[in-house]
Length: 112
Length: 114
Image 1 (cartoon, each protein chain N blue to C red):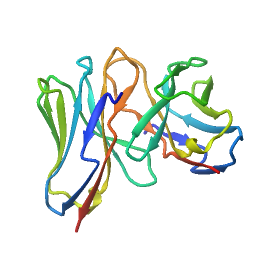
Image 2 (image 1 turned 90 degrees about the horizontal axis):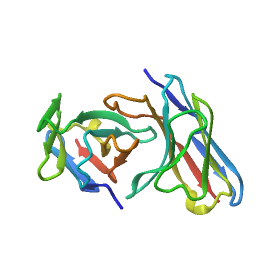
Image 3 (image 1 turned 45 degrees about the horizontal axis):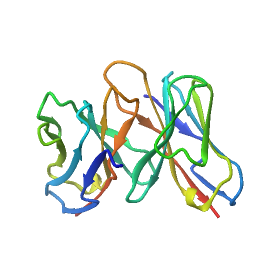
């Protein structure tokens, strides 16, 4: 059973556009929601994370929007660049477990 | 920076072989994890360990075992490799306690079983 559902599976965006990736979860015990970025041939690396006590977190061109009541969160990449082309994973964590639960990933391609 | 090193980037093994994937981290993290990554399925947890000689099954432990004899090293063992174990294997670590920081992942081992 997929604890975190992620969409879309793939995304193509023009340079300068906004990339949006969505995730949803069911377990209300989750209290930490990171996003990971993975380039080909590399392991995923932490990009940005949010806790449910805030609705938005911004770091540079990357923003997480969090909707606690809907149990959804999303990653927005503003002014998308070809260097942002990678696979993005959302994840969720709660103190009741000792693991992160990952979404299925989104392959982002930014076209010059 | 924390470094997680996986000993092999690419491996090709034959069906039925016993396969060892090695992972070493250098920041004294208590928790270590093995995931496999498959297209459309994301990252699925195989096993994790929160202390030396301790192990816990993840979501897909069948066909795998693990060993953690030292804090810095976590090994994944495929007892009898099968073609459906062809995948990218990722090791990760993170410290124990407090607000969770993110995982630190290794670069992965791409295993092909023929």
